[in-house]
Amino acid sequence: ETVLNDPVTAQYTHTLTVTGTLVGGNYTCTVSNNKPSSKSSSIIVSVPSPTNLTLEQNNETSINASWSPPPQSANITGYRVFWTQCTSSDCINQAMFTSSTVETLTGLMAGQCYSVSVVSVSDLPSNITTHNITLVTDPSSFNIDVASTSHGFSLVVNLSNYVENNIYCIMTNVTLLRFLHCNNGLGSSNVTGQIYDVNPMNLSIIGLVPNSEYNITVVVNNALGSRTQSFSNQTQPAAPSDPPQDIVAVNQTLFTITISWQPVDCAHQNGNITGYEIRYRKEDGGNTKAVSDRVIIGADYTVTDLQPSTAYLIKVAANNTAGRGVFGNISASTLLFEVHVISTTSTSINISWPEVDYEVLITWISTLSSHCTQNVDQSLKNDSVNGQASYVIDGLKVFTEYNITLCINGSICTFKTVVTNATGVFIS
Image 1: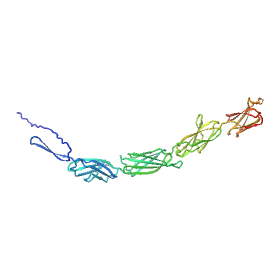
Image 2: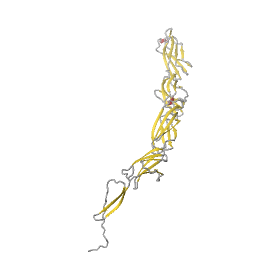
Image 3: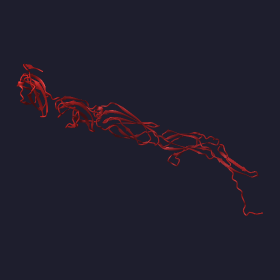
Image 4: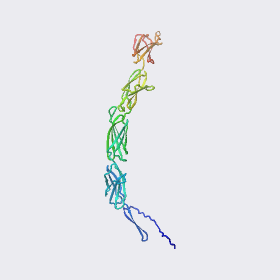
């Protein structure tokens, strides 16, 4: 027989799992073996926490809290409610004990986030239920910074009682009061609605008429209310967006074309009109030229130094303080430079031509195809006149054909073949 120096202890580990839902309370667990030996221990089961905790804002400084009792509430004598600001680790207030499942928390700070906890009251340990809520504030005051562009406004709305993660709806109503450049308005309006959750809130109003005065109404809404501000402001000028109206040619000479027009309509002037820019070129091509005095005040202009019998494309655009607008154009021709026969006799030819402010050189000579060959005189005769548009060539041969040439500026010429009468007088 061997005697061990140290006692030997046999250890066995057993795990007992009790399933099912236990009502909160004190429990005793007893474990025994097949000998008259047992071991007991005390087990405390916590009281379950309340369920369905709901928080609802009552006004800017109070919250309604409600909840449901836990499934097993036999040992519950009531509830206690705690609340603290979300950013604080300390309770700033505590509700009184209540046997109800509804509690109103008052004396809170507007615009703050609160963490609300509800715990069951019992002699036993209790579990806690916690929810958070942020108090929405009435948008009672806000300021607006405005920057204008030519076609709209940029608004920056700052809320004094802004609360992050709350939903704000901003409505803007814009009404045209008048065009500053012609002092009247159409009363049109534009409405925009947008949702924002940042502060400051940036709004853009576009599609408006430049150089015009508008009334702007801004409405801020949230869950607690609505606040409105109205003010007027002006858009900036822009270059005219339409050409002058009703461009027409009112007079043409050999070397000039006079045009007239009506102003750009008021809604598209976009500023105070300072004048008009006129350009022209030959209709069949060539370089575009600008008239010497580029900004013209008025509603008509005579384009000079043109060529006779030529079609031109003439363009007109309005200018204002912001720049040049859109060109409108018209096609018009200078007069045809030609000889007109007023009358003939057996010894004279009465001719006319378009009036010019230049000296006119007149030349005539009989042709070899004259009806009476004995009358052919191949000597060239000429005369010049200034400030008149007709001339009588006399001392001619009877029943004789003549080539008549008219020239101005030494290079622009026209001619006509005319036969004198055989006898008597012939009027064409």
